[in-house]
Image (cartoon, rainbow, N blue to C red; front, side, top):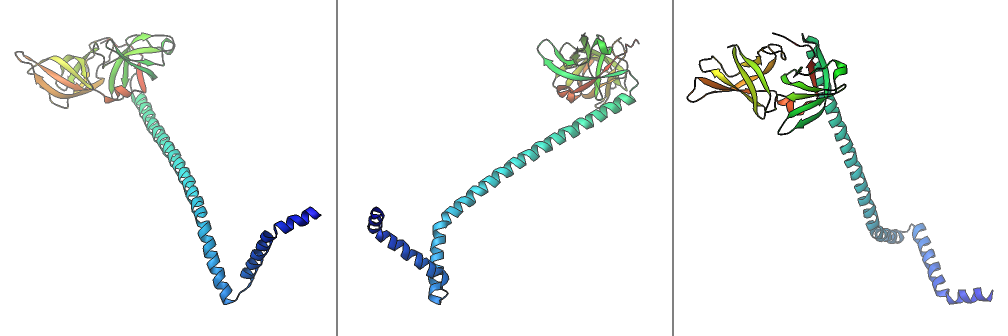
Length: 264
């Protein structure tokens, strides 16, 4: 008991100060006289000045959190939008392919491109169809935009097709409507050329280039490309015809295999 008393005596100044402040606060908050109201207002202003930085800090943190949430939501919406756009384009492409297959007179087999290979020796694609699906070597590969190649190796469930963009690829073609016949070979990008065309042949820009039918691989009149340039060979009675083929060959996803052999 004596220790408690001595402790109170030692800290009496602090206790008196705390008691005085408590009484002052009580009077300040419960007295509505004009002077007291003025003092109370000044006190509250001072108190708000002291707490303002803390409130400002909380606001900044909250805004940063909200901004981060908005960034995440925008990213999520952007990804969803991209996915929807891709799905729309894929659906549009598939509908186009189905329509082409339905309207075609050929026995077409739908195939998915598994891999694209390009080297100095061979430009090719690997397809998800093979012998089990009726695929054989030297069957034409086409898309709605035209001929793109032929099968050169066939396994049970997969096959490899040589593309028209391969430097060693050759195909007999006919220029419509002149009827001029030539051998088409790849040049660069989406450009091929036909040589040995007679100089007096009536060929114009925009003429269609079709398969000639002079082989047991390609049926006649399959679209190959379009004439974009005509050059006369120097010191020769022949001309060179430049042909633009499909620009989609570099991004193939789905193709068709013509499963029947044709003999003209």
